[in-house]
Image (cartoon, rainbow, N blue to C red):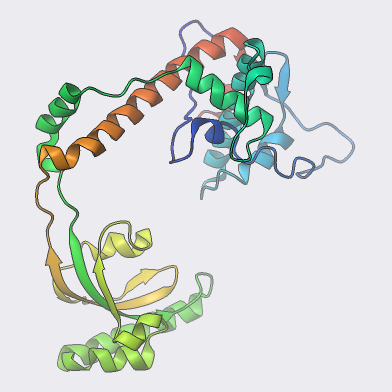
Length: 295
């Protein structure tokens, strides 16, 4: 590694702890994975004298799902590098022997968690820092928008193209009928919908962002009040959607926003601290071969 080069590794990209992110699932099914036919799998990646071969990367890829297999491979390789560097550092500092596990952690997970807590403490952001952030971002800090929605689900499996086309066609026909007879929505929901909400006439009640699947939400919050002119497609099929009411979120006061701002600033500080720490560890242990995994 060249001095000062930042290792292109993302550790925090979800709600999991750093220890869990560093080597989530790695201990599961350790004896499974691809097998070569009489020859060792190729290896381009090393942390010090530890080789991380393509078989290990392929095994890790199952925990980094992505539509692009190259991105999944890259994420898996980087996760294994991070895990190995943190494992080595915990071992160097003798943390394995002193760490106490909790919540079903493996010994390695415990050592990494203790390492992160001990070596990268992140102070809570001050009230002044939170206030500065609030004043700079007040327009973005609002109560969530809410929609009151009814729908008719015309179910179709994600991989059944014929069924999905039929669901869309039937949905468009229902939309045409509802334009002429909007009072029949409850009747149509009870007759045609595959969702349990059919018993309530298709009522989904009030929906905020995060309450339902992303692809439904994405389209739902773009709609105007009234009957949607086209079906909304999700993994479940096609939906005929009626937006009965939209309530736009009001601005938050500082008191309402302070806890969320503090959590956000603390997460940002932790991410920065971890990136810097990983850069130090990459120099200490000599990561080689990551260029093969850069996009």
